Length: 113
Ligand SMILES: [Zn+2]
Image (cartoon, rainbow, N blue to C red; front, side):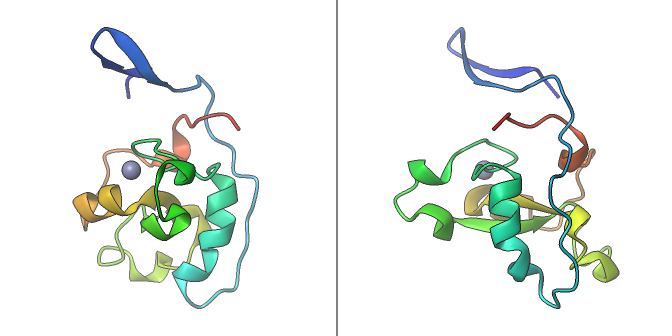
């Protein structure tokens, strides 16, 4: 992954050089959507892919979703595994659909809080 997204010769988003260390580890929910409040805090109210923030969206967190790093179709047993879940805007979540990521975004760099 690049260290930054460059647009018109200026840095738009800067990614930290440290890997994200999960701060939460909730377990026991039977539906993956129940993890959304944890993921909002875990990923600083930002989409893990495009880094858009809830506050930039007219409907705030309603425009964000719980995304599976390993799609549910590929790993139904991990559908409610917190370590397989990330916070993503609806656009990124929709565009990704059932595509497997080449890397786990939870194991790469994230914005610092
Ligand atoms: Zn996004």
